[in-house]
Structures are given as structure tokens and as C-alpha cells.
Image (cartoon, rainbow, N blue to C red; front, side):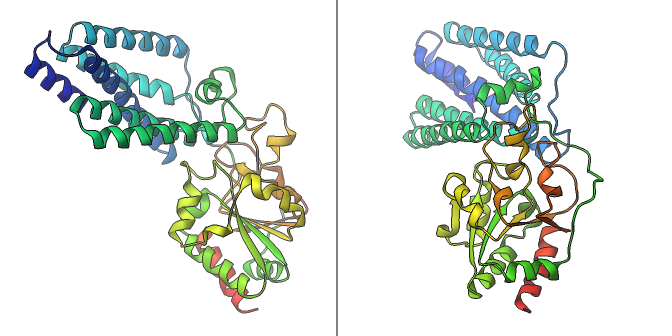
Length: 362
């Protein structure tokens, strides 16, 4: 769209009559829009595991990124000084390369933060395009998306306990989350749906921690029904929401809203973390990194320093997992081997259905 804007502006107004600020907005739109497009394609491939979820680095990457960035800035200035469609095309191609180089070093649980950043970039390009086209709706909408995305990116980076620069380039010095890891063969305590139903049935208070596994299995509706049945039995149930749970900003909030979970049952991390000690059972559904004690106890771990949900403080923990494969950060979770922890293996929707039936039969 930005290249069409450039072509139309130059064709209609002539090189000398185009306001410099308009040309600067077009250059910004071309560069940042191209970065956003290419970066989004790479993050999509990582999330869908079409490529490795680990950081991808190679010798000379910082030099390649820095050189490309300087060249892009130079071409942007040239586009403002001497408008040319071909300069815009080269700038767009360079922006595509920059987008790939920006996202490749990001891996594991850092990817959702980059998604939020790219979303903010997209909003800013829409706002710049709206200014050039004189479209107030695009300008306002793009500004709102850009501002919201920037704020959300900052909040998510804070929730990970790291700066945005460390999130983007931490892999260059070994500070990024890892991505995929090997499944553990250490012994754990597992149980069937009937045993877990008894554990839940005798609890007074239950906290549910949803994660990406819940979204993959599309088990949110069954989970809400389970929570409703437990509530009918006089059991207090709440959902603990971690800011970076899932694979995109606000993933769990959207997922549970789709299942029409009452908003008052959703508790943010800071509001509920102090209540785990008074909780009988924590039900972790497809989450891992957001309850991994390594964030508090293991200096040098990729997620060390990230605020987590204090599930380890509850009296009993039930993990619903497909396998012993590590979470998105690629590291083992010692909470799985805690004597208080019981694992319920299987697809979240299938096992949740069995658990629901067992609770109803009690």
C-alpha cells in the first residue's frame, strides 16, 4: 500500500511538490510495514512449528542486522530527498530482510512478546498511511493499535522479567528462551480422571491455570462446564491468568471469554499469587513455563527472573499434559516431579471430558 501511495503522490504532484513530511511518512510505512510483514511470517512459522522454535543465530548476524538497518535508514532519507518508486521498492525488500533478521534470534516463550511488538508496528504504519491519504479513520485506528501494542509489549516484557532489547537480542549472548526440548523420562506420579475427580470433589478451593495446551485442544468450553459443576457442589473456583500464557498477547483472556467464563472469575497474576497457599488444588491445563519454579530458583535458566504463578505453594497440584515434553521455553519443570503433583496425561479436551463425567458422577 505504501508503494502505491508513493507512486500516486509522485505521479499526481511531481517530485518538487510533494511535502517532505508526507515522503517521510511513506518511507516509514514502507520500511516498518515490510519489517512487520516478514517478521509475522517467521513468527507464524515458529508458532506452527514449521521451523525450529529455538533462536536461530549465525556468525555475523549482528553485523548483517546493523548494516541492513543503517542502509534502510539511508534509503529512507534518500526517498525523502529524491522521491523514486525504485528507491521505495529497494527499501521494501530491505525491510523484508530486516524483519527476518529481527525475529530469527527470538525463540521459545519470547515469541509472544515479538508478536505484540509487530502488532504495534502494524498499527503505526496504518496511522502513517492514514496521514498520507488524509483518512482520519485509518489515522485514529492505527494510532490506537500502535499505542495499545506498544503498551502491551512493555507489560509482557516486564512480565517476563526482561527488557525488550534482551528479549529481541538476548540469544546473541545466551539470554533468550530456548524453544523445543526433549521429553523427560524421569518417574512421575500419574493418575486417571476418576482419581483427579475425587481430589477436586473434596477440595474447598480450586485455582485453574490455563495454557497453550487448552487452546490447542479447544477444551475451554468443557473446562467452563467442569468449573460450573464444581461451583454447584459448593467449591470455590477461579482462573489464574499469567500475562504471557499461550502464544499471543491476551490469549487466555480471549479463549475463556469465548467460552463465556464470567469475567469476575479471571484473576491476574498479581491479584491471585498470594492466595495459592490457601488453595487445596491447583489444576494446570496445558501450561508449563508460567508455573516453572526455575524462574525463581535456578540462576542461569532462560526464564530466571520471570514472575510466575505460585502454583508450587498450593496443597496439591494436578497437571493436565499431553506428554513430558518441556514447555515453550525448552526447559524441564521440576514442579512435575514434586510429591504434591499428580499428572493426568492426554489431549486436554478428551481428558477434560472424562474428568467432567467423573465429577458429575460423584
